[in-house]
Amino acid sequence: MTLSYAPGDSLAHRLDPRSKLLVQVGFAAAAFAHTTPRGLAALTVLAAGCLRLSGGGPRDLWAYRVALPFLLVAPVVAGATLGDPWFRVDRAADTALASYRVLLVLVVAAAYVRSTPVRDSRAAIQHAVPGRPGQLLAAGVALVFRFLPLLKRDLLTARDAMRARLGDELPVRDRMRIVAVAGIDRAFGRADRLGTALSARCFAWNPTLPRLAFGRADAVALAVGVGLLAAAVAGAL
Amino acid sequence: MATNTESVDLVGDEAATNLARAALFAALVGAFAYVSFPFPVSPAPVTLQVLGVFLAGIFLGPVWGGAALVLYLTAGALGAPVFAGGTAGFGELVGGTAGYLWSYPIAAALVGAIVHRGGDLRGLDAVSVPVLVGAMAVGTVVVYAMGVAGLYLVLELTPAEAFVQGAAVFLPAEAAKIAAAVGIVRSDAIAAA
Image 1 (spheres, one colour):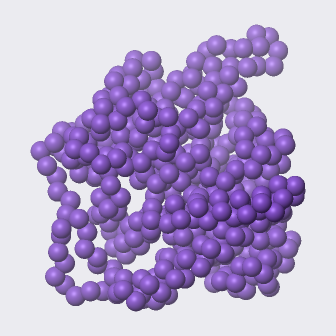
Image 2: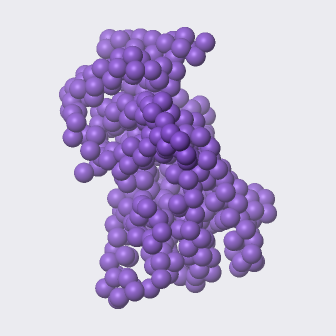
Image 3: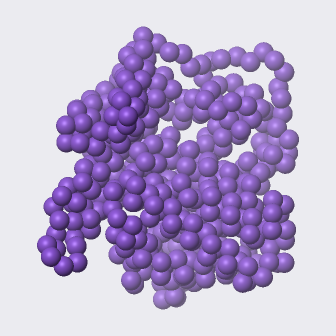
């Protein structure tokens, strides 16, 4: 199962997306500045709290299982040495802490993802990035969300079709070529139809977006975000 | 809902089509994460994401190819499941594979700039195979150099350890992808380019 927005009425769902983004940035900065057992223990409590407040639980983290091998192997690679003493525990411990902080940042990100609908994220980008670059970015991101499932299905269809014709017996580079050509061809076809449709429907630089407003709970979230950034700066100095 | 009372400011046809192409290519790079190929010497199944990065530069050019990958990273950070293995979230952008992700827009722009010799698109039939292969080799170096640097910074490995874990085991598969990419660019099936 993949991590995605889950409708709900939790505290995190009611927060403004901009304050949630600030908390994430602050959290990542604090985790990098305080990579010590004590610092990470405190941040673990905060990360679990964030996930809880978004109505999520451990099963949301299952989506990150593919990131795990990379993070688990790193301390082993760091500890292993050629020759005596073969394994240096101190090096492995440093890298294990670094791996663990990445995991914590992923937990906080999961809380954002499950509590923020796409249109709110889009509005937040448009507020954060000024001018036309921000508007192109916001519109483009919304389109990526919309078209990802379609293109995924195009690719899987192409692969199934290739298999049905004994394509599995071809060399890897031919299989890659066949699937990618089908994917790109479909993507360009969709893009050109979409471009025409956007123009035909008055695609504008100033669309109507959901209203974003800071509420009372946002004051707390913003304070947490600023506090984390301050802690990061204090740790780095 | 916020209401705009000023008049509508239309996006031009060309910008609308370019945005649609960049967004669809970003989604395609994300969709490539779901199609994996077992590869003999690689410890993990190989996906086509890096291939998608090169093709974005080749088909869309340096400006819109780079923009497509910026869209990809932004959408992923905001929760679209486009990163390797279908993950999403801001955490990936500072995680173990952060270096690879940040390198994508740069690699796409660089590959596009080499293939098209600057910012303006030229017909792909005019591009020779050595130029294509050279551009993608440069792109591969950028992706893996930044990926290894990311491992070094984020996971505190030494450069040599980071190279073994983050690049050496994946490089043979990259050669297969470059070979596939040349076949794709020379394919008659893609008419829209």
